[in-house]
Length: 182
Image 1 (cartoon, rainbow, N blue to C red):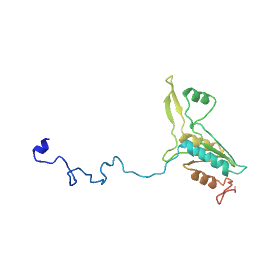
Image 2: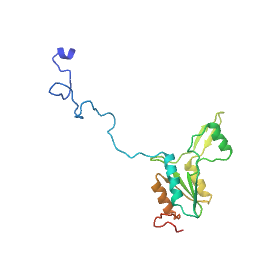
Image 3: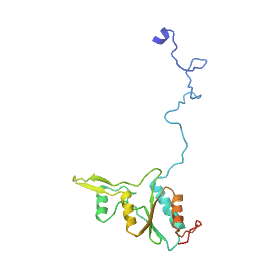
Image 4: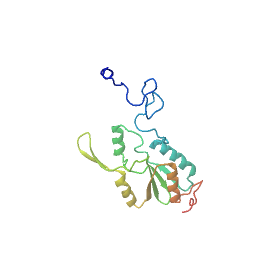
């Protein structure tokens, strides 16, 4: 090579006694770190997995006369014609995922990690007309203004959901210290 003819070495950086290249940052030959350093993190469940876990937990801990139900819109990907049909039937956007009925309606919106409430946006339909899609940031205050809803909160885990129930004094089987009082 041209470098060898000039008397230079073809290797740069640290070398072994046999003249082979080594890595300063890695003492194991052949293992060169790529990208960001490895970091252990707990796997984060999907919103559907969180929804199913909250549903199982509510079935276990909620005591009568309190009741709950879910509003499953948005959790299942629908074909455009299916979504249009449900919209014609009155399905509304921006309603909380879980509704607890206890002295009024209490809403729990399930979100993963850093996700936020949806925002209102304007889209074009297939025919080209503009359509406003209401987001949770606008719908939640409107729900509260009806007087039927007592509170709406975001939960990112089953523990957060239980804490909301305790804060609201919803009767629970395996109660927190305030559970079961109104």
